Image 1 (cartoon, rainbow, N blue to C red):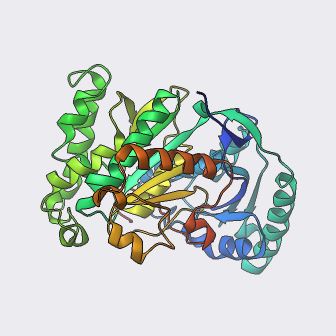
Image 2 (image 1 turned 120 degrees about the horizontal axis):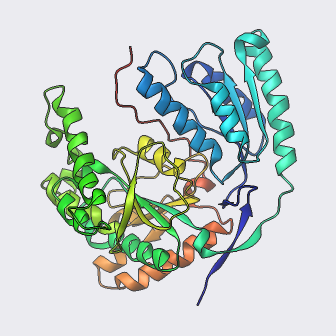
Length: 392
């Protein structure tokens, strides 16, 4: 049986599950203006980050590349870039590369327009016009092979690796088998389990992809070592330990379950969008929600499946986040934040496969436009961009 969904087909062939005007401040100094515009204009979402100036060239390029990928996301139908005018990010490249997708893009500069109030007025007018322009776009029937799913776990406990991560792994395998794309990350949570992932790499552990898995884990660990710390001082987190996870290795073994069992096709750097090649991919990203959710949205994911045991309720501006809870007690306490109760596996009411099928049917509904719970309550502002160097 082949599955389809109703999505927004963009000029470049990508398919979105949502149709927002993305308001992108190119630097933190432009955030207040961007926020004011979003408050005024319906149908807009803002990508409010803390970067864009007084950073090393590597990070300024990384921020520019990430903002480009967010603007190119198929869930974004049009873009308004809000520039201060003297930032370190490359606003012209940002404008040009997003425009190359065929979607309408506008750019304002606060300094050029004469300050905050005039920039808000001009930006509001432009955002309003963009929102009206894309509001008439209609969903079209497309094959499930057009899906790009991001996956993550957070606020994990012992039930995550036994229930909710297993459900996401089941869904990941099913999507890959249908010719879709699945991306997982959280490199910090590969530690102690990287050899298992390398065995699943196309070409084996000694091939270039297998070696790259070891490389990104070592690179992540070395970032902590450069300031005299061990990664294990922050992982597992205090919440993970209270939830029964005793070591980073135990946490990693549970975390990688959500990637399923299919071969790993390659490694994406943090700002990268997925290529035309399908299957299972890794994105080198940290575990903290604001940065990894941004990284996953930047892949072009239309939605993300998020496994939790202790309860992580936040979403993302442009990407629906389906919360799958492995702990039945947490689900009972936080049922207005959690989308699916995988805790029924723990108490023996349902199998992994049964809840996996429920999750699959739910993601089809979300792709077709059904709101997730964090969308419905507008808990969607969590984002930031992962950088590797200091603020200077």
